[in-house]
Structure formats: structure tokens, C-alpha cells
Length: 154
Image 1 (cartoon, rainbow, N blue to C red):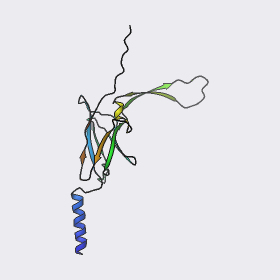
Image 2 (cartoon, one colour):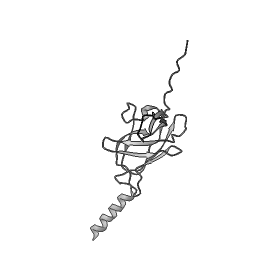
Image 3 (cartoon, one colour):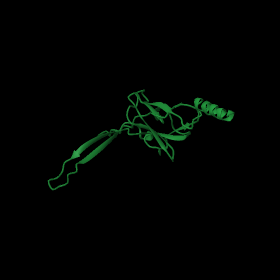
Image 4 (tube, rainbow, N blue to C red):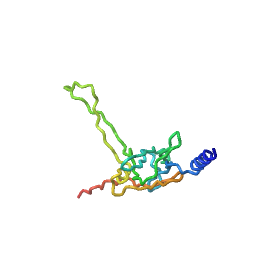
């Protein structure tokens, strides 16, 4: 009986001290000028798994926060942003000979974040190591996309 109570005490101590296998990740994403990135998702990715958190109006996100309180496992993650392009859809008009009922759309994407932050395969991809022991914060700053150079006419 003493062993049972000892086991329960150790288990309770472990849970209360944060030795869970899963860690809650929170943070904020801002542009260099301090404006929050308030669109898209932050993705923490390994070759085996990925975990995603939506950015809110202030650029805050939370990853691995489930109803049961679990988080993401300790590991080294590549961190990137998804859903950061502004997409404009336009309807393509059908020809008189087109008998299909399907509508056709054309889309144009406008990047709002520099491309080096929008792929886990970028040479400049962000890395973050999640270690055991409680909640972790990962704030980071990103650049806006490069603007195309205007060609001067002579």
C-alpha cells in the first residue's frame, strides 16, 4: 500500500513540476517596424510531424494547446509561416460554347511576408528547440517581401 501512495506522489509531483512530454508554445510575430503579423499561421515542423497555430490580430499564436492540456513534444523544429499571401480571385467568363456548370476562377497571390519565412526548406529557415519543462515562448521578427525594382525609362 505504501508503494501505491509513493507512486501516486511521484506521479503527482511530476505532473505539477512540468515534466510532461508535451510543451505549450506561445509567441508573437512582428514585422521589423513593430507591426504585428496578423494573418496566417505559424508552423513548427519536423520531418515526422507539424504543429500549427493561427495568428491573431496582435500577431500572437499558441501551439499545442489542446482541451486536455497537452502540447507538442520536445524536439528541434523548423519554424515557418503559412497562409501569408493575399489572394485575389476573379471569375473567368465562359465562352458561348462552354456547356459545363462549373465556375472557373483565376487567382493572383500577393506575398505579404518575405519568402524566406514561408517555406520550411528555405536556407534562412528559423529553428527552435523545444525542451522539456513547462511552457516556452518563441517571438520572432520577419521582413516584408522585397519590392520589385522599377526600371527607369531613358
